[in-house]
Length: 266
Image 1: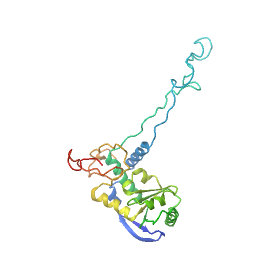
Image 2: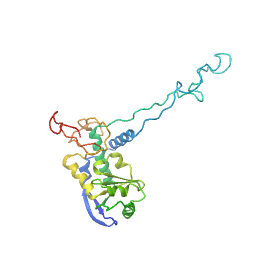
Image 3: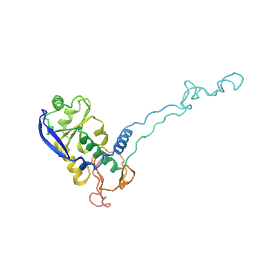
Image 4: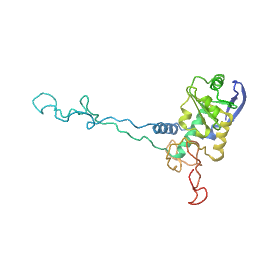
């Protein structure tokens, strides 16, 4: 059990929150979190890099000089990849780097990322975060009072608030997300997390209630999840389905029959 102090906007401690990281993730697998982060980074690649092969560069295909008698190498076309201005021998082609981990693995990685942040004392709690109008200066003053300014930071709130979002977006190195949109990459990339009390409790309660936290951050075209997520030793780990973050919509346990109410996609 971890006791997290709760601060107000001035940096004064106003309470405590008791939370057990094991409620979010029974264990922390660095390999699984690494795999999820690499997947998100790969899916962000454009894959538009391209170089020219010898068939695409300009230049004559005539043999440069006769085969024998010059004392030089037996040279062919000026477009050869071993010559200056020639084509690339193994030319780079545009490609798609996208791939998808199982849904259960992606969701469990998000839970592990949040649990590891709490265990490593890298989460700061604030009682509430509200603005009557967008004020970046006020948000910067709050971060300074909490002692977390000047470093990369993820602000996690319970629900999207336009005033809070606009107050945060112009701060360098600071991002803001509702807890329903968290994923392993966004949680692990910054140095610290700032969470409202309600956001942390909402994340914990939703995980404890039904084992899922839905999100719009999961890669497109996610394939169906396998039965279990493997342990570190390669054996299957049986357990309830883990649905944390990274999904684009709430996925029901059973799909309704065709023509039945609710059978359409969201």
